[in-house]
Length: 193
Image (cartoon, rainbow, N blue to C red; front, side):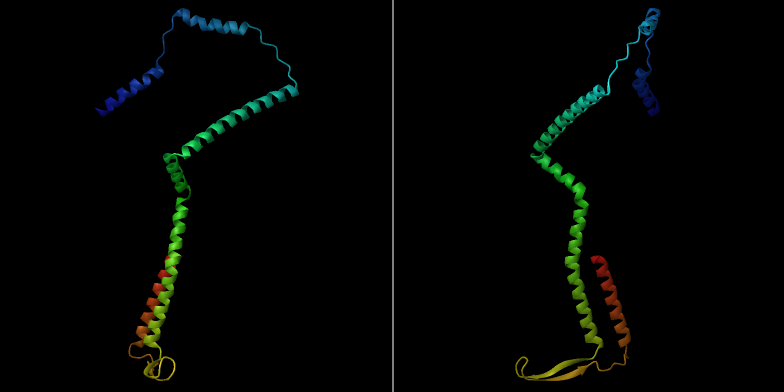
C-alpha cells in the first residue's frame, strides 16, 4: 500500500515536469519563420571602442558596484545594530559568542580550578605523607619532661624508633607507605595537568 501511495504521489508531483503541449501544424511552422527572419537580418556593424572608452566603462561599472555594496552593507550594519539592542539580539550574540569561544572558556575555567584547588591539595598530601613516614619509620626525638615556660627552661627527650634494622614488618610498612604516596601523588599531578 505504501509503495502504491508513494508511486501515485511521485507521478502527481513530477508529471507536470514532463508534460508537453501538442502544437497545431500552424504553430509548429511559426518558430521556424522567426528563425528564418532572424537569420535574414543583417548583422550589426561592430562598434569601434578605444582603450580609454573601455576603461571608462569599467570605472563606471566599479563605481556602481561600490555604491551598491556600500548601500547594502550600511543597511546591514544599521539593522544589525538595531537588532543587537533588543533582548533577542543580546541572546543571539551570547549564543554566537558561546559557540565561538565557549569551549575555550570552559577549558580555561576548568584548568584554573584544577590548579587553584589541586596544587594546595598536592602540597598538603606531600606534607602529610612525609609526616606519617617520619613518625612511623625514622628515629626521632620526643619531649617527655619539660620545666619552665615555653622555650625557656629545660626539656628531657627520648629517642623513638631507634631500631634502624628494618625488621618486624617495618620494611613492608615503609614500602606500602611509599607506594601509596607515589600513587596518590601521581594521580593528583595527572588531575592538575
